[in-house]
Image 1 (tube, rainbow, N blue to C red):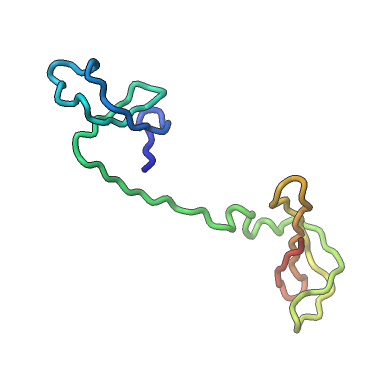
Image 2: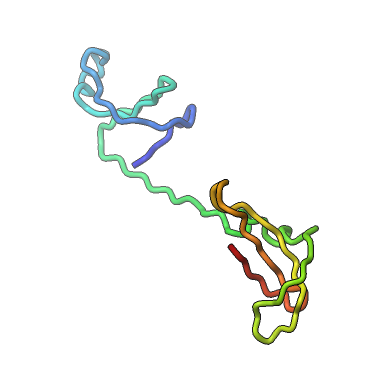
Length: 121
């Protein structure tokens, strides 16, 4: 389980509550565990079972690769369409670095005739 501090958003760790840090009225917490922030003074004693479940939304692939706007202001080149029934000989293209810097860029194509999309590399 991974929890974050509600005060400063840093990751919380689990540590035992030291007996010498307990006030006389809180001596019952000695020996228990707690969530503790390493950055700020936030702490929460675990005096019962703790369960929390949150699901995060994943970003759509279009948002990462640019979506429909990624084909604005791109160049055109002479290349045969990959679609069998299309006789297109020109396609728009763009190059994106999707791997490490020492690898070649990936070329994305979009047929000017049928709008079929493909990539190379």
